[in-house]
Image 1 (cartoon, helix red, strand yellow):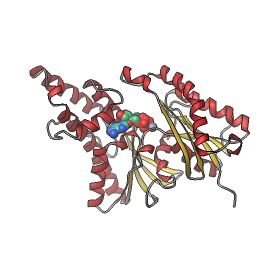
Image 2 (cartoon, rainbow, N blue to C red):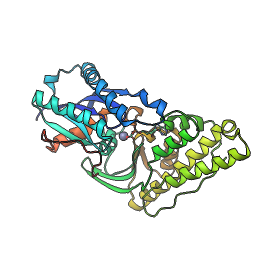
Image 3 (cartoon, helix red, strand yellow):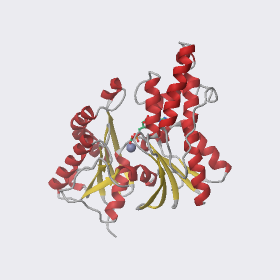
Image 4 (spheres, rainbow, N blue to C red):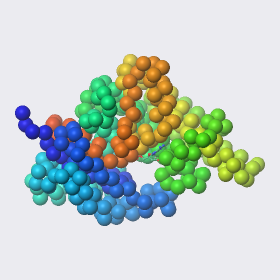
Length: 339
Ligand code: KG4
Ligand code: ZN
């Protein structure tokens, strides 16, 4: 049997520059250089993101190779995110991956960023008992909100997705309204832990089937606060924890309605979450409670695989490699790309 491949993976789709080395499905290193430059702007500035990727990419790759104790000549393939994402950011990782694959004369493997978030669950040791197919996956990040049926590493069907904002975006925009730093999700999570989730209520999204909508909730949040502040100028400062807890509950409720419906309709017993928002402690707790009640297996990823990272690109690249999916050197980055 052929030896398992050594794969170098590169992720640069948004504001994290990351490189990882995998030996088959086993992770040997996973280095993430996060970009602090966006904090003062309250969101990712694409032009600054691509510049920072340009500065970070070589040291990040060198660091990943060093931690894995692998020489470039020992690599069997280079996997990279070819989309979706910010064009300028994607181009840095794509160009780097293409150059290295040309220099080392090894295959170049394009990876879909959203497939990768899901496949992070298949990294060796991600769970005590490995996840089995089929499973449902709620992928929740700053750019996407999707409910996906996963029948195999290469067999995935989107059951539903957001028709407007992503849930991470809904966290981040509310945080901005509250004057909290970017990214807002982790901050709201922390503040909400000390708050009363029933303090405020917001307009609930009401879409059929498995699709999501968060823009109405965000608007309801803004109008509710504007009204309260008109009557009590110190309302936000005095009730910050309760405001965060109530809004977070509204977002999680909107997700859970669809999660429960999909599990009921499909009868699938394994349920996973992925993406940056899967780091949210209240969402994790809610899913675990629901799973225990209905005897479902809930797969919550280790924190290092929630926000953007190259380990997930590596595992998705591994399955593409096994399927013989190589890209020619003429391949390009794609800001929008079919699931
Ligand atoms: O997957 P990710 O790193 O990047 C994208 O592909 O978008 O997700 C980033 C998103 C941000 O919106 C951030 O606020 C959110 O994940 N996030 C969280 C938490 N940690 C990160 N949202 C809620 N609670 C958290 N603990
Ligand atoms: Zn992501």
